[in-house]
Amino acid sequence: MKLLIQNGHIIDPAADRDGKYDILIEDTTVSEIAPHIGAERADQVVDASGCYVVPGFIDLHVHLRDPGLTYKETLATGSLAAAKGGFTSICPMPNTKPVTDTPEKIRELLKRAKTESAVHILPIGAVTVGQEGEIVTDMKGMAEAGAVGVSEDGKSVMNSQVYREGMKLAKENGLVVMAHCEDKNLVNGGVMNAGAKAEELGLPGITNAV
Image (tube, rainbow, N blue to C red):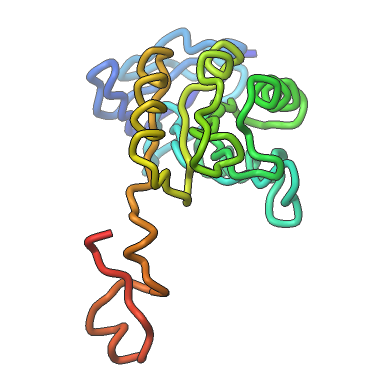
């Protein structure tokens, strides 16, 4: 099967390409990119006039809620939404039930992704066991299982020594640390950003100092 995408504006930073080009795809491989490729060379032609054509996007922060909270989102529905928006890889946060905090859970996620996900899954493991902020997870094991990073997502590791240990282990094992930089003690019951609008609504604000 040969698919030709014509007249699209390609943006591809990796190839330093930004302009109008045609793309010939043979089966699942891009075989040629050129200013003009004849339609006779393809089985199917797509006119991308007025459209941008880009490599697949990567979403570094998604919530699949699977397992445990699938009434909100599932591996299947979340990945389909990503594909619809042009994202071919996504990084699901570990705040599932149970928390994604072990090599076994990383492996199970990737195993399920093979049959349930429409896009590539790049797992994010938790920094601490159960996201409780007390015991650092097995980062070496999670990295070997396929995790690409660690995060506590919306929670913060309030024990600086625990977080320091976690960040050192993450670096040693090639894991990216995705930090939710917030001191929970400074939230102080706030429900929105502190400022004129919070005062107008009579709602407690969260200082930007958090």
